[in-house]
Image: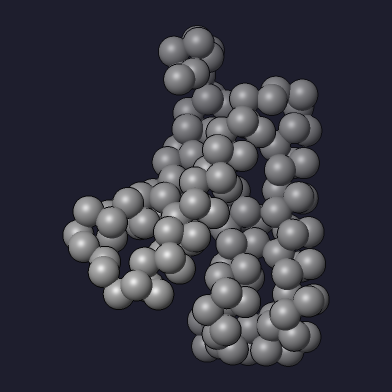
Length: 123
């Protein structure tokens, strides 16, 4: 989960053209966008591959869905930032997709991995 989160932060820094992350130079500030995108992609793929380590593909499904939602949220944010017409409903959709989906999938994966009755956790 942390690899996926870090990958999204690396990609966000590229999209936002941010040269600082948590008080340190961002990867794109140090190595430029091409390397930063590839590092983000590597972290994303490593996180998704780790989710299949026990051949339980429900973890992969949950995490992949979160990655999809986070990407949709970022694209919506970019679209709305250009038009400057962000209302409250759109704002909540963006943060639900970009932030809440990651937290939700972390909780779902944790619950799924500890439940004896896995069918109760599947959507």
